[in-house]
Length: 637
Image 1 (cartoon, one colour):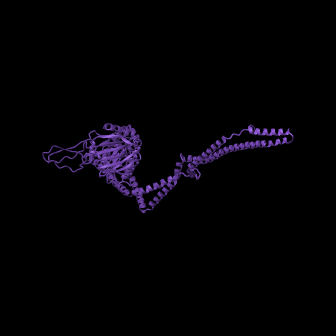
Image 2: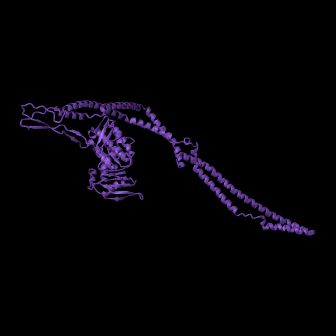
Image 3: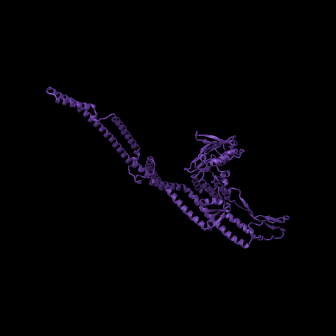
């Protein structure tokens, strides 16, 4: 499921009449006010109505009526639109591909929610709100904290004011030797905690300084990467020589359609001439000469006249002269017969000439088309247009590579960029040294100084050593006993079990199987966000998490708040990434990081969101004051 469009009228946190076209990938949605627009809450309220008009809470202040709607692309590529009057009725529409119009499917709230889940691909409400929407309030440190108090109270007897108070005694159940040893360990840990805090402060300062140069370093890295990719594209682009083809093959491929048309026209002309010749030759019939009655009559008449004249005397012999015209007429008929035979012979030879012409045309075109077909096979393309496009693209790639190389050379020649690169390299080297030093100190994980002090105070109190000034004497008549409570220690609840339950339901599996698919990727996110201070997580069958630091394993609930937030964020990002690989659901971040993460960490998290944007739709809702990167697509709400 993907969101295609948002429309809002008189909706709290949005422009008076907002209409935004959405698309897959990473999008920045800039709110008109100083606080992020409640996009996630609005979408949840419209898709999962409570039936009591609860969505009226999204009305803009002072507005009597409002309207909101979303367009979706379902898992089956169908288009849907959900429109609702805030506090009133709503309707679900589906696009009719025949007339390109949206048609009402249902106006029943229960049916809407059911169809959004079954057809469009919307997850259940709890899953959507707790896995696919991110806000600051969801972080473990922003939730109600558990408070662990001492298991017993110290009770000291109150005597008359004229008597000295009894000294504090060790509490029952506490081994003094073990407690003293623990005090020594805690004091050493406290010293180390202070040292680590100072080193960490320096590391944070280095990160802040490095952040100043990040834009220049990133520009240089991007230019270097672009130049490398452009050169690789040029090297990978085919040429006639690399494909083993003739140098003029591109010209032949371009001429192929014209040559084919020319061949077809010539063949048609020959065919027309053949038909005409056959028609002319069909009307000529050449009978045998001996079967021609005129020829026979002329010959026989001439012979008869000569024979008769031979038997006559005197002037009768001149009768033979009359045979001359007869013989002449017969000769003329014979000549006509010979001419007819010659004409038929010429017609037959002409038909043979047509065949010769056709064969020559076919042979010439076969040789030409054979070269073109061989080129198509060598380039692994289907049509000549594809081959032309593939072979003609190299000049454009070469121009792009030259431009990218020029840009890289300009940056390398810029003294500011050179200085930024040198300083960034020095800062990174110092960061690496600090990181190694932190790893060498007690396995690389040290508790916060305040946590060590709290435990030290408790252990000292368990031995009867006053950690705070003794209270003043009670006035006469006070109660016989006074209870003094130990100082409470604040901890955080482990957020991972709830995530594992939702994830197991989403992937339709059990927690161990789910964590097997998430473990490695979660470790990568955690290591990146914590600068390798933490490097892994183990989750048991109940979903409880233990965090790996170099040299030790810590339950999630005992982590410092900042680290716990980063672990929680890492596991949620992993769940979204794994699910987005098989099904698309829009993920909404309502400025979930600003004020929670260090400014130096924000670019890293934004890059993580952009990576997720290659798998699904990421909507990053920001306040009006947010400044997005120049390459980020920004839409106004």
